[in-house]
Length: 89
Image (cartoon, rainbow, N blue to C red):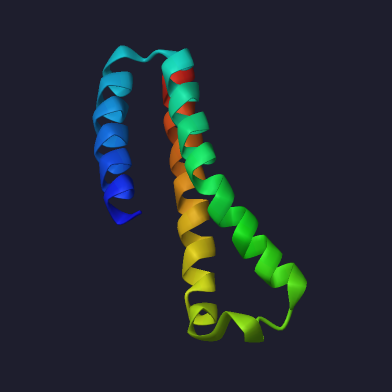
C-alpha cells in the first residue's frame, strides 16, 4: 500500500501543478474527487473504530496519532478551499 500512496502522491502533485497553471475548474474538481476517493476507506475505518468504542481504548498507540490526523485532514481541506477560490476567480 505504501508504494500506491507514493505513486498517487507523485501523480497528484504533477497534476496539481498543471491544473494550477491552466486554472481549469473541472480539473480541480477531479483532483478533489480523487483525493476524497483515496481517503474515504481510511476515514470510514477511523470513524467505525471511534463509533465502536468512543473511549478510543481499542486504538492502542494509534490513539496518539488521531489528533494529528484530524489536524492534517483540516489542513488539506483548507488548502483545497483556498486554492479553489484562486482557481474560481
